[in-house]
Image (cartoon, rainbow, N blue to C red):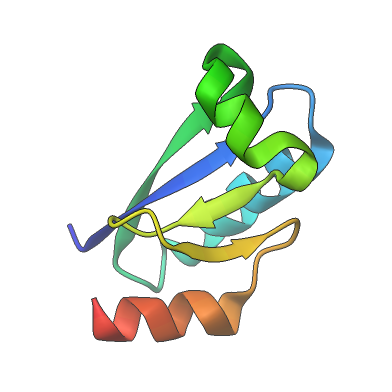
Length: 81
């Protein structure tokens, strides 16, 4: 498996669900996996991300995009792994 990403979001967030669905679709052509983390389960994450979710980060915690999936930014980040 290629790069590992983290999707920070909330269970009741439709934008978070949309980004997760889009990411699953891209896994057919791009080599990456991702974990979903509920920011409401951790007060530090809730304070950090607040209403910014969903937030997609790389293995180093660097933000790739938020609110909506930026496919070009994701492809660029995966290219430099």
